[in-house]
Length: 190
Image 1 (spheres, rainbow, N blue to C red):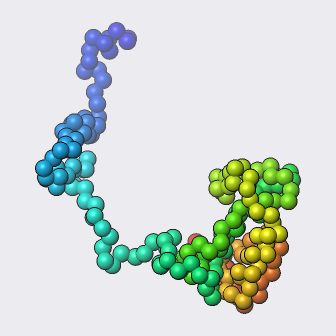
Image 2: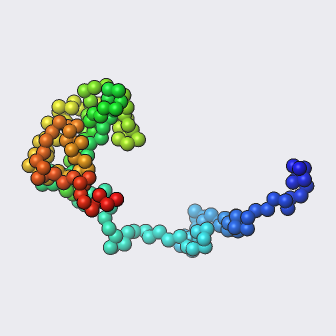
Image 3: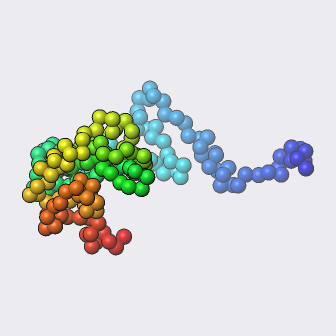
C-alpha cells in the first residue's frame, strides 16, 4: 500500500485553501534593508490587506491605565496598594512576600520584598512573580509594616480584596477610607 502512494503522487492532494496560502506565502518578498523607499515595500498580510501600524498613537488615544500620568512620585491623598503572598508552613498558609504602593498618578512610591518570619515552601512565582533570589535581600516584616502604616495613615486606600492585604500586614484601616475593587458593584457582574 505504501508503494502505491509513492508511485501515485496524486493519491495525496492538498486542500485548495492550503495550496492557495502556500502560494501567497511564497510570493512575499522580504523587504531589502537598503531600500530607498521603505513605504513602497510595505508587505501585505496573508489575506491581501495592507498591514498598517501607525508610527505614533492618535491624539484621542486613551492612556494606558498602567502607565504613570506624570512624574510626581509624592505621597498623595489617595494611594493604591497590592501585596503578593508566598506559601509558608505546609504550603497552604500565606505570608507576605511583597508590598507595592502607588500614588494617584500611578507612580510607585513604595515597593519592597518582605522576608517572611516562617520558612517559604512555595514562592507561587506564576502568580506572585516572586523568586527565591528576590527574598535574599528582602526587608524585615516589621520594617515594611511600619513604613506602610505610615504611608496609608489618614489616606484613602484603593486595592483589590484589601482585607487580605491588610491582614497579611497585620494592619487595620478605617472602612470609610477603603475603596475595594472586589466589592465595587459594576465589577461584580463579571
